[in-house]
Image 1: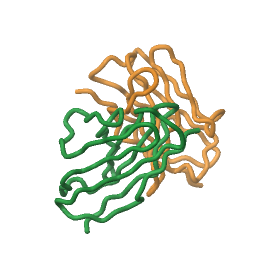
Image 2: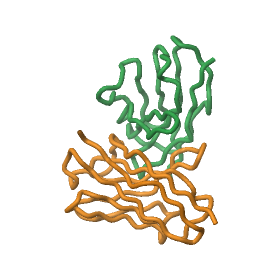
Image 3: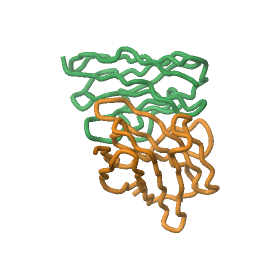
Amino acid sequence: QVQLVQSGAEVKKPGASVKVSCKASGYTFTSYDINWVRQATGQGLEWMGWMNPNSGDTGYVQKFQGRVTMTRDTSTSTAYMELSSLRSEETAVYYCARGELGTGSAFDIWGQGTMVTVSS
Amino acid sequence: DIQMTQSPSSLSASVGDRVTITCRASQSISSYLNWYQQKPGKAPKLLIYAASNLQSGVPSRFSGSGSGTDFTLTISSLQPEDFATYYCQQSYSSRAFGQGTKVEIK
């Protein structure tokens, strides 16, 4: 079946980086965008940006510019999101989500989420 | 950036009630509006896309309407499994979410 499976929970110190993976299966990886969304405990959903796995093109929310990098490995149908200079307030669940290529699409398939804890 | 505002932030309702949640965009987004349901500890689930299109497998008691800046999600007869948090999302320019509406048991 169509699914996105994310890597396991991470604990990082402030100032460190984290890299979360998202492995796609059951569909053609390069035919859909991969988006990243995060959610702090008890808070709402925050979209971080998108990546086109076919071209490698990316688009990041301005607040994350310079700290986030979205990449992919088409040979393993895996997308990655790396966030650097982590702060304690960035403790959250990070989700990947599939969307149709281009503008206007909703996120129809989501990963299970990866808990990232930032603590000294 | 386009801002999305949901109302109410929370509501209490009983099984069988008709529930309406509103989402307003800070500028026109045509029909580029999606609705998601999220239960505690779970990833969000797509309910409605492009304002009024029911995602495959979603019960028909869920419906969406609106265009431009004002949108509505309606649950015609609330079921026990519908108690959750609901988010709107615009997909006209980037993908901003509303702040969420928590539907609780009265």
